[in-house]
Length: 290
Image (cartoon, rainbow, N blue to C red; front, side, top):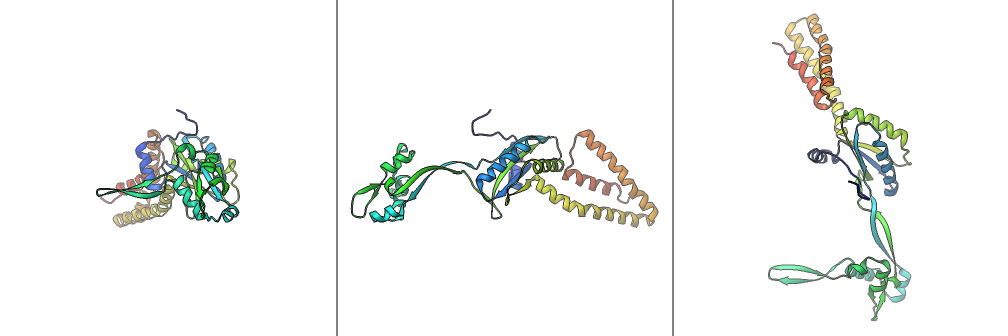
């Protein structure tokens, strides 16, 4: 299904919920565009989306459309306001009641209280010319004047939503993958984006999602793996009391890992944190002293 102005992003519902709760990104890979202008950031995000779709293993890539909302900008003319003895607050109060449905009183029904709001019908609120002609501002000395005589009314486009992260504006690109290990996919995607997308000065990209957790796990495993091997070596030495036999057993570990790698290939598994933990735990169980 394709709808104008709507892009499809395919992912598993439960996994999307877990990813959203754990990383704030509802897909395994998320790309964040940081910058100062939402218009320029959306342009960069669309370019990254197009490049991401060409990377093998991508099932969907979707960049947020932030510049898609329509607004009425009403700018008071201070010169005209002073000529009629009005203030900006007078104009704002009229706009709040006539267009924004500001509560003007309350109705009491037993123990219940309900706000009562009054505003112009939708036909008069959807046209800038009608707003300027029909919305009246009360004058201090009596009478009214059309809003269009003391303010400029125009239809503009702006952001539908604004994200901020670490004090910077952010636009997200959501990427879902299949059949690829996370680390290898992100490395290839980063190379493709760097080769095809030119970032304006002051703009940057951040890679998040499960990849962020993978990077943290790699840093921890870089410490845990040597420490684990050292501990296994110590336990073996305390058991055999001989360095030669201990080294013979330790040298068998690389050959044992070959079988695990072949099994991963045969089963079609991708390298992940869970697989790495399994490789760490297996030799510790196999080589523990009897």
